[in-house]
Image (cartoon, rainbow, N blue to C red; front, side, top):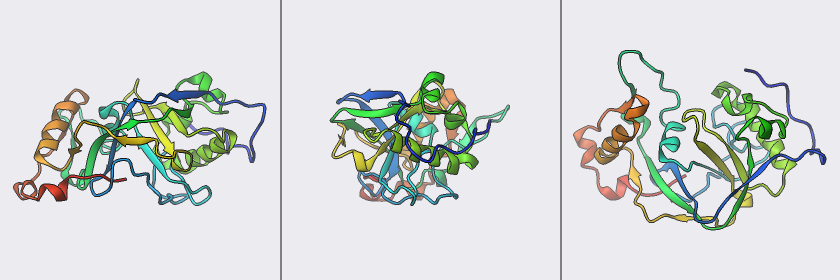
Length: 235
C-alpha cells in the first residue's frame, strides 16, 4: 500500500473533508508519561523524518498534540504493543522496559470537539486519500504527518482527526490539536493505572489476553518503589 503522492500545496475550497463531533462527556483513554498530567498535550514537535507517530506535529507546523481512544484496549494496542509480532505457538510478549514510566489514564471531554473523520472509504476520499493514510506502517509516517498538516490547512476549524485503529480493528483512535483545543479535557473519576506496577501487569494480562498478548511481571524491586514515583500524569 503506497500513497498516491504528496498532498496539495494549498487548501482546496471545493473540497470538504468529513467531520465528526466528540460530545462533551465522552470518556477517552490515553497512555502517557507517568510524571506529567494526563491532560497534558505533547508540545515538542516530532522530527520531519525520524520517529514519531502517524499524525504528530512537526517543525513545519508546530502545535501541541495528544493521542487518545474511546477504548482503553485501543490506547494500549496503539502504543506499547503496536510493534510486537505474532507467534503461532505462544502469546506475544510486552517487556517491562516497554511500559516503564507509562500510565494509562481516563480523561473526560468537557466541551464538544469537531474532528476530521477518516473512518471509512468515503470519508478518506473526501480527504483525497484511501486506506493507506490510516493503515500504512511506521516507515511511512513522515508522509502521513505531511497529509495531517494539509488536512489542518484544509479545515481550520478542525480540532483533531479521528480514524479507525490499525491495531484494534473496529475501534476508533483520535489525535487532538492543542492549538485549537483550549481546556477541553479534565481528569475522569476513574483512577489511572501505572502500567509498570504489579497491578498494572495483572490488569494488562487480563485485558490483553483475547489479543494473545501478555506482559512479563515487574521484578520485586520495582514493586517497592514509592507510589508517588510510579503514579501521576504525563504527556
